Image 1 (cartoon, rainbow, N blue to C red):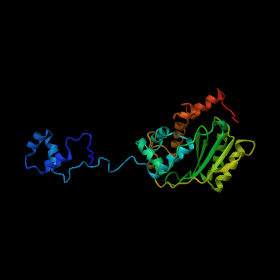
Image 2: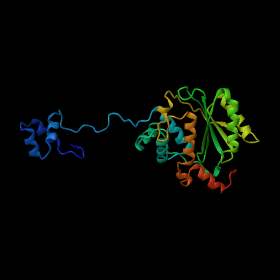
Image 3: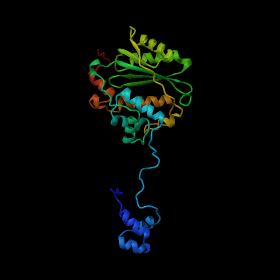
Image 4: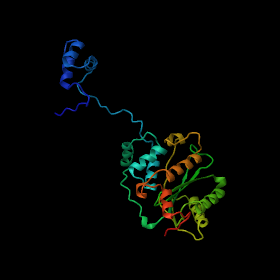
Length: 285
């Protein structure tokens, strides 16, 4: 039978059995076997002769369900490799997550290797995600809008309050029309919330002179039962900031600081600027 010993073990099961059955003193056995007295005492007090498991009983770096959902969402929306996803997760979601733990999360949810987006389609196709947020995260602005450019992963956030929905939509549409570093060519709306579909159509009409196609890409929903500090505990999270301020900080990190291998080791913003050749606006067909 193959015996598996700890790499730093100074005794074998046979030696340990000898210690347990011997009538010699601890000092005499330590001198005879050329081991410490503490080792002799430890094995004399044990009921068996084999090493115990060295695996930690509690893995504190395990991702919470809400954090797993965020990891999977960023994985698909931003097309991040495992190493890129690890960097983003540590910065934004959980600072002490390990690469192995992140890999286990992807395996748990049966995530296959991502297919790289087709660069031939150009820049300008976006996903518009909309989520109703629970009061535990924000009571005054319960609707979160997210715009993600499908090829580069350039992302933008907006929080919408019910009583200021029209004003927020107008401001968001103006941002998409004037401030984005690319021109929107098509929109894919995720979710089947009637009010969101109407909002998407309204945004489309304001962003370009013609109505752009809006397609529904399934339903994205999850239940967030924890507070903001329990869900996002990354290196860059500041408990003093509101959700809106946190989203702006995270938007800056994702767009301007995290390099992507498939974008020639550039950030989304830098890659788009390179395509522009110095021009502030462009339209790629």
